Image (cartoon, protein in one colour):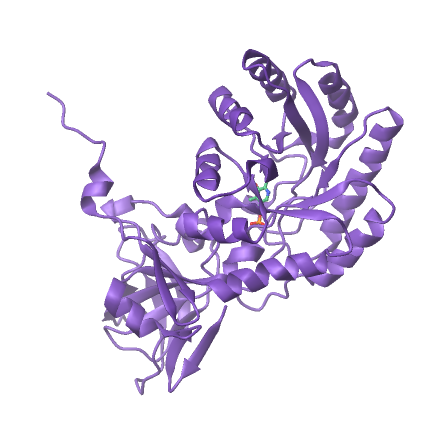
Length: 413
Ligand SMILES: *Cc1c(COP(=O)(O)O)cnc(C)c1O
């Protein structure tokens, strides 16, 4: 992220985080426009040799300003719900560049996506295929179909974010794909456009991605021999980022791996990156409410919690946490925890920090699966969001109000 320190104070681009906390309060999500754009440009450069479309995976961060920024850069979008489609359209995204993933698409979601004219449905089962054919027939449309196949490769990541193994709920087994493509070809309200896979998230090794590409390409060639030609090959997202000491995969190397395999092919390459576009372009700003010394350990109780950033509680994920202003306090080891009534409500364990009550902390790498997973647990309003563009401060989401949180609820009589 475009983070820098001047005279001991932390800045995002040209704006001091202290200024933001004073003006907008905490907890506060802060994004850097330069970092978002740099992440996108890294993709377009790495895959320049292959005709491609980057479909940003909306679930990583579905805030309208972020979607709008990617839409302006020419991105497509990978959505997993009708709600995400509404957001993409509201943000000015091109429906012709939208791919619709997910194992549980409802008939209503299918109708909305057909109405918008999306690029394709990534179909994940035979039942979904039949439903899509029926819904398209009812509305007098032809639905573009791409199957999500499960290449059964081990992405070597956290089990909760691994999706491409046989035992996962996602996709159709690659061995069943030829029969399903034939079925799709026989149904009147469908047209086959492509193929898709997505094997997992936070991948730090390129070899599973290369293996998945090889298996998918072999299948595409089998399909071609059977008379089924595809327009695009979507290899999903999943490229990891650095949270702590991981070595994220080299995008240029991934670009070369795919350029080799796509040379001489006519299909367009699609990718569905989420985390690697936004993860390190955002941080969560939080204030220390209390320092609570203990016999065995010390706690720093901050005003951000698992409802703001769920990844530590959900996956025991690690986020770097840094003091916004350096001070001459004694260095102590703290568990950084939120105010929520759950032992699982932590942001980071055993961090050595020189801090005092009232200090600001920046929880780094929080741009992906942060705000998009935020909830109202413990009746906590969701944080505000700021987008920094050099020295400009854009409030892109107001802090949720107590009234907005209760809207739609009523007493019964
Ligand atoms: C979550 C998801 C992605 C994005 O994954 P990242 O690890 O954030 O890049 C892409 N495609 C599908 C189908 C997904 O579910």
